Image (tube, rainbow, N blue to C red; front, side, top):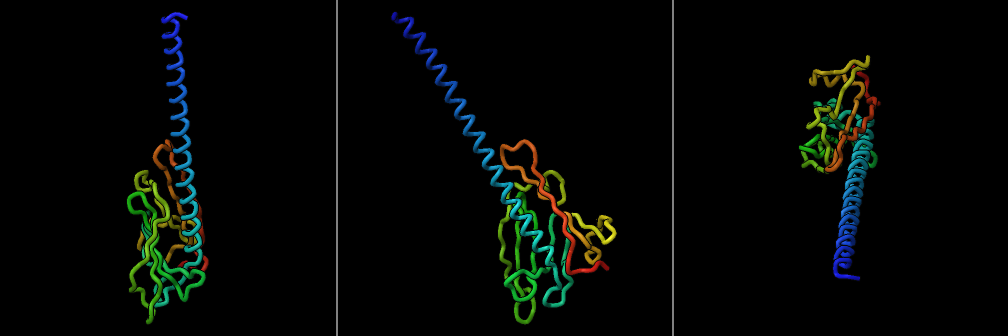
Length: 187
């Protein structure tokens, strides 16, 4: 083999190696993006399950408070009877930036909710506020959407939508569920 043949062979092999390494890097990047997206969707599903469980068990507060304390498109504060708890716990679900969080306060003695709330992050990369998709939509007993957020006593059901889009995802993944408030009768 001549020197020119060796150089041409090295150039071809180098091009093949660069092409192969770029393909492997692209494969790892795609796999990483997919894994991250699946993780975020899984945490959003767990958050939706916890939220649905708590909303379905809505109840009057131990201090006699109405079950729904306050509501908005991106926040809901309410009392709920959860398993292994004495009395109703006050929950607040809300979006802070792109994080869906839950805070809870257990009743004290006497039955007040003055303790420090315990907060936890349930899901990240939640894009509801960015995409203008309400986290909560409220309906009365006739199925008419409630837009006046002061009408907490009229709420009979809640539609929950969690819009998840982690870095690398080109389209949002929206999880939705509807629940009827079991322990209430709309007024």
